[in-house]
Length: 349
Image 1 (spheres, rainbow, N blue to C red):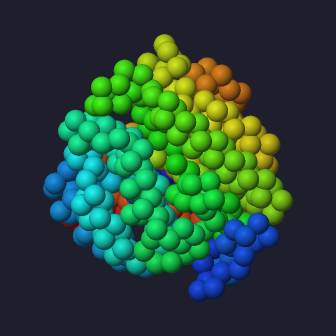
Image 2: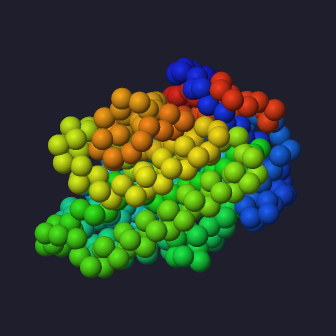
């Protein structure tokens, strides 16, 4: 385990996980679940590795995470490359081989850099939908299982989205969703000569967004039925990117691809009598906030009511990806505020 830690604040959230047993039980909705352990920790990274130097360091980054033996699982919230490098089959295979060296279960949701933005000339001028198909072939060839060490998860394979997964632990619902930067993939494929979204592009966005909305609704419905203590959502897209706030305030349409998703999260959060926790990458700078609390300018951008129970953490990425975030959760008997804390763990080199 790395010898140094960088402490951050303790969030006022009611969120608790339990370590998976070797043969986890299954909830009535077929979502893998386990209640055999009290406290739980998990690690999150995103927007890594970016560029040749970080690619070279990536194996050692993984080994640093492997050395944290107490982690129950690790999540990579997307962007396995920067936005100006080629989206090649060979690179995908290389990252998959590195992912296979994780000794903890690894949950991965694709980012826009590895498919949405691959139309760019310096990315290889690929059709993004072809790259998405390739990502699913390379990284999601065994739907229902994590990468790294095996942990069973419930997937949307039946809808063609094996990357959308969820599971429960210690009465906490955990849901990983394919939500993309670049306005959820609505920006034109300019590298292919397009000046507006194509029909096939719009069809993909509609289908994927509908699937995301289904999973959000099902996640909260199951959490309510089980009397879960929290819902945890993970995405690549930063739907509250501070660098886009001024532009979004002037022209909310630049965030139109997220509008229905944010509306669903707000509705479900406000109907759920426990905290909701959102972890994302995309904007590369660590942040912790309540993006839809009273007075937030994002309320006007999205035209939504206050959702005070929505807490967010953005993980460091790109040049800032010199650490992983370790989340520590209090035991199963804890409820209400004060059960979740996190710290940034520096990589050893």
